[in-house]
Length: 273
Ligand SMILES: O=C(O)c1cc(=O)[nH]c(=O)n1[C@@H]1O[C@H](COP(=O)(O)O)[C@@H](O)[C@H]1O
Image 1 (tube, rainbow, N blue to C red):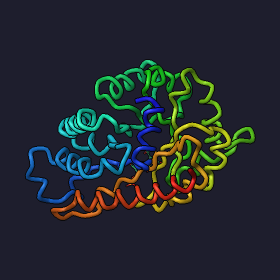
Image 2: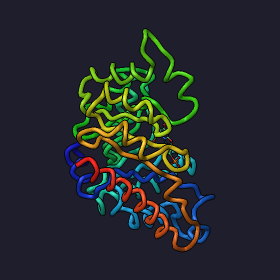
Image 3: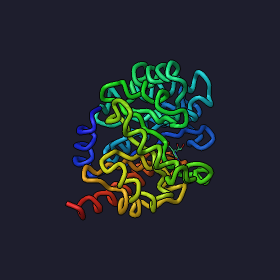
């Protein structure tokens, strides 16, 4: 999907919400466990109920890989379902890959070509030649970890090297890579106060911002410091939406949560236009 199309969907739906599909069989309603593919049944119900409020879906592959081949099949069915039924939504494989170039090109093929995701999360630690193979794909996006939402982000990402924090080196250096227009960045919602500095370096890039809801980040703060002219934000919530209820009406309750966030986003968007 092109960035222009993503921006136009955001404006159409008055939403920059990304629903995280982090499915855990211990947390989904127990009656679904009788289904042939409980993970897919859960995702399908959540997607059908929330798609009018969300512009993106982000399955984190760990939650599928944890169930072996069956989990991988559920992931494949989920992305196929999204692409066939809701081609207007932006899809993110949250896989946090990255390796020597030759290997990265295989990861890129797996997520962009075989599975058909619009984007994949990638770790920057191995540098330019580990990321550029992902950037070769037209209208596919590489979402580079810059400043993550967890406590461990302070171990390396905010440490200074040659007068700049490591996450700033990631932003500045990656801007010079080939096909860098295909880059987006992860900035955790719990680090909203850093967003003004991030915007000084990457004023237009899309930022994937996880960490609202269960991790305590604030939507308002993220928008205050992080919103760009083209909106430039995808705010993810996983547990806060998909596990809002474990009852028979779980999908309806998830939709209510998604709608609540979408309405907050609409108020913010209305305020700036
Ligand atoms: O890349 C990510 O999406 C990610 C980066 C980050 O810094 N923090 C973070 O929480 N995530 C992911 O975003 C999701 C957050 O889930 P909730 O805390 O349940 O909303 C999980 O899939 C995390 O793996």
